[in-house]
Image: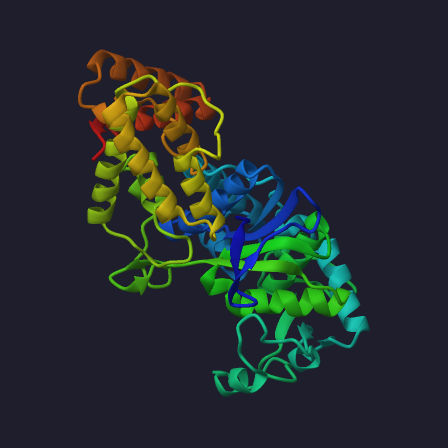
Length: 458
């Protein structure tokens, strides 16, 4: 069975084969980096981490690009509030993001472009659109995209222009010829800081959000690539506008497959900063170990809604313990996966059906049950090897099962002291490594003015 992926563009499962045999090019819209990442962000990055892991496990080479939006109204506002430069803010938040998602075992992308590094490419693309009559200069100094001049607008969201027009909430303003038009280049405002402005043939200003991804994806992957991904909330207008810009400029399809992950919900509401119902990754990792959080996310299908609650995380922890219990009974043999093995074949069939992690996880539990019965080192090795495709079960089983309760107090205090020494020497990478190593063993460190204490993760 070949890999099938649900394509938002066609609203159907389609057989997947890369444009270049053996090489998948994938672009995922990443973070607008003005604050700490929350679990909704983790869900998006985890979804595509699993995608790229499975593509690699299937023998493909993957060029995975996940961008960073480091210029935006919210970023400018936050930097001004804190009295620091935009670069200081974004560098700080990018470092925090890397730390948080690294703790969850989310592998870094092949390329992580920052929007501010691609402004020349954005200006070139805007120039192409203006030359084709798809962009116009507004009276207020902005450059806008003329939506009605692009024949395919609405094909991703499945909405006609008339439907979109009927749902508009604002009148024509700011020099727009049509309320549906969107900004490509924002004219600089007098009260904006100098590091939020670029000189250009369109006047001093900065790029609109949508043009950033069109330029970065084209520059890093080419005019047409295999997979474009992101959260379901980006389907419209962000991804719709990307298609209009990129295909309007090149006349070529931007991506073969459009892939969108589902929301994280709290009390049946989408988790978001605007609603104030979000939990940062950092906050959650104060209560639960990183692999439990990863398992909680991975065992749900990436397109489904994910309901966040302590009860669900507690259940994930207990389920993960069952898998680690099987691995603790016998030393797993180092095995290369034989995909003709019945367990491996079922796992592959699940993952080949639109990355079906719920069914794949069910195979892991069946395999664990067999390990419990047989104490087979080979089956334990297969369990560990298959789980690696999901970024799971690579830790020490006994350490995970102890969850800190049976660890030597003296050893823990020695690690706390070593971390304090690293922080005093400003070796923050080593200090964070020690904290993460303890967390992997079920030890949560608590820093306060009185010093550092520890407790076992729940």
